[in-house]
Length: 76
Image (cartoon, rainbow, N blue to C red):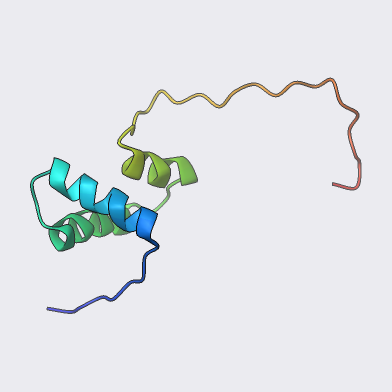
């Protein structure tokens, strides 16, 4: 079996530890499960990955509408 070493900031470490505890599995099992799931997806959006860690993965997410009261910048 291969090994993977990653470096996490303390806040990310805290969140991942809590996520693993919610599923009653070890941190390495949690990471393996979710990395495998992410690797199987051929096309995904940033929302898919964010919602995975936020625990809010839903298919009904609608981005907010943007106000158009500003002038457009044609060079962008």
